[in-house]
Length: 154
Image (cartoon, rainbow, N blue to C red; front, side, top):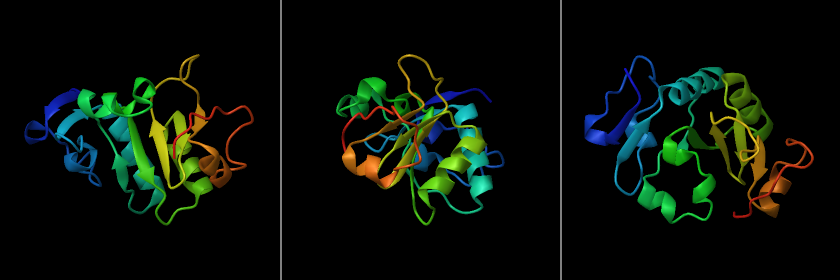
């Protein structure tokens, strides 16, 4: 199977490969468009296996129209489906972050009640960690390196 980009009704989903997720969980909330990056989904499934319990995806793929209305759309990896926002749920911030790293995610956005994870490479334009304002910095205090950028937001 190759990466897929298109309507949810045509998704070539491999339920054996990603048994704990569905296309609906990663589809754009405004139109149902799906982009499947197999590597990113493999890492997400590995994280789920390491966690040993459910992960609630609060954001997966976002179409260009949906992403265009967001404050940080230019920096967003979710429009390429390299990324997921995962609700903290019953997990501690430290354990969820550690398991995301162990699974193979490379970049981490630290929100108040969720963790952005993605497989995008780290370079001059893509930091390994970032926070979304003072409340998220406070919530994740001690879990990110000094000098971590803050991009504002909730």
